[in-house]
Image (cartoon, rainbow, N blue to C red):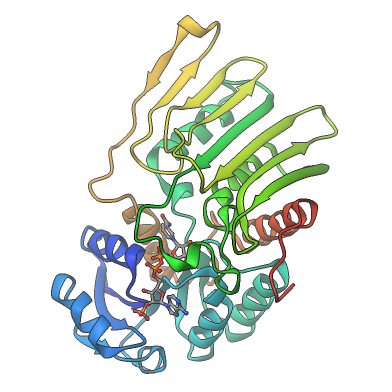
Amino acid sequence: MKKIRWGILGCGRIARKFASDLRLVNDAELIALGARELSTAQIFSKDFPAKYVHGSYEALVNNPEVDVIYIATPHGLHHEHVLLCLKHKKAVLCEKAFALNYKQASEMIAFAKTQGVFLMEAFWTRFLPHYVKAKQLIADGKVGQVEYFYGEFGFKPAHPVAPRLYDPALGGGALLDIGVYPVFMALDFLGKPDQIDAAMTPAHTGVDEQCAIRFRYKNGALANLFCTLASNLASGGDIGGTEGRIRFTHRMHGPTTQVEYYPGPVDTREIIPFEKAKGNGYEYEIRHVNECLQNNLKESPVLTHELTLLLMQTLDAIRAKAGIRYAVD
Ligand SMILES: NC(=O)c1ccc[n+]([C@@H]2O[C@H](COP(=O)([O-])OP(=O)(O)OC[C@H]3O[C@@H](n4cnc5c(N)ncnc54)[C@H](OP(=O)(O)O)[C@@H]3O)[C@@H](O)[C@H]2O)c1
């Protein structure tokens, strides 16, 4: 099997975790790094060596040996950076939030189709073993009809606080940074809501410090979602159904959570076993992208363009209700 040669665009915090997990994937090779300053890429390459170390994103996308680029810049720049990669016919895995709004996301996806190039949102949670297990329990009818989802994600950024978290130009705010997880899960477990309500607390820059969201469905199902940059929360989740309940105990978006299944009253709890990640958890999405590229796919059959667009459309609707605006809207 041929090696898929990866490039990383933006050598920041998440790029380090991703580069570390690339080592766990047999048919993946980190071949090139791209940073705005050569020195940043050089420092990164001391821990994660690559054949090519570029001092600009343009040099990276012009490297003929790169098959696929992982975009790890702030979400306010994803539109620009995805279009840059696609223009040079590079396959792309783009971090969440995929874009600032639906309009940007649909332009990115339309351009990938025009160019005939693979593009996927890096929604790593969808590929994690615990999440796949939970989806299987639902598909097997273990919770019956899903009636309710509660999901939260909250953390208080440690100092020094990454400026992107509060910068409106970079897509700052709790919703696009961490609220995307409970929103994604509600969409995945319950589908597109019929009605959305939302409220937010503004931070000093005007972006949302916290955001509370409610989804209502015509069949009576409800979702209550919450995200905050003001408190450290358990960041768990609960799926309630007519026949049972699934609980993610903490950090439900990541591989260290625990999945509990309650077929009946609260003392009937079963702990659901699942494969523990060897790395940070990004290896699963990397393997999936590699498999797509080995099979010459232009779109993931799991994290589809349709799902990414539904997520962006829903985030737009939440922002409209809560009063969260970006200059590009
Ligand atoms: N999947 C996950 O678990 C996860 C976790 C954290 C973050 N993320 C996502 O990954 C993205 C990056 O987050 P991060 O925490 O890694 O951010 P970060 O540490 O601030 O890194 C972002 C990188 O983007 C590049 N960049 C280009 N233009 C920039 C600008 N104007 N301002 C700041 N940085 C700029 C910089 O790299 P160079 O200087 O090397 O060019 C910078 O190091 C975000 O979209 C975030 O939502 C995902």
